[in-house]
Image 1 (cartoon, one colour):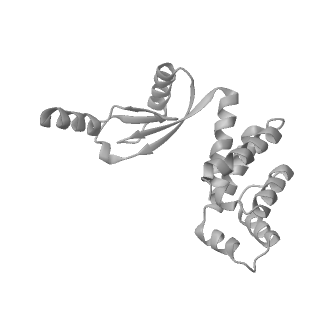
Image 2 (spheres, helix red, strand yellow):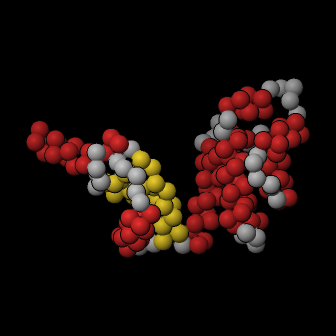
Image 3 (cartoon, one colour):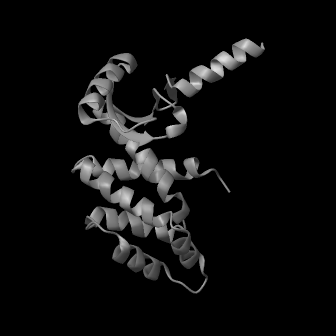
Length: 177
């Protein structure tokens, strides 16, 4: 079977073409919700059962989703289910976000910190990171006490690791070399 990213790309591009004439943020939220539901192993097991019809899978997903779905998103979901691509839905959502971010000049950033970051500190950190990466960033913060201190920032395929854990690892490598 082809890699999920390869399968997801044309679906994400088609979805983006339809969504860009409307509220992209609203569509992104709905697609995220569908992706979260589609990632559920019990739903996937139900959908893969040979006696379950595409309309039953569609009805179940629509009943579980917490946000109201636009007609275009419902049509998209029907297409994904009928083409047996439910497993690719999380990858489709991810690629949809990439397209949405490219169009708006924004990148997603994951900031991993050893401690919770206060809103004022986060605003300062994001401003500094935007200068460093040269683009607007939409930050998401995760807490990982194993970092000991500092932060690790992931923007696309770029990583900026200023954590104490990373510094200790570099010192270890330098001392044992």
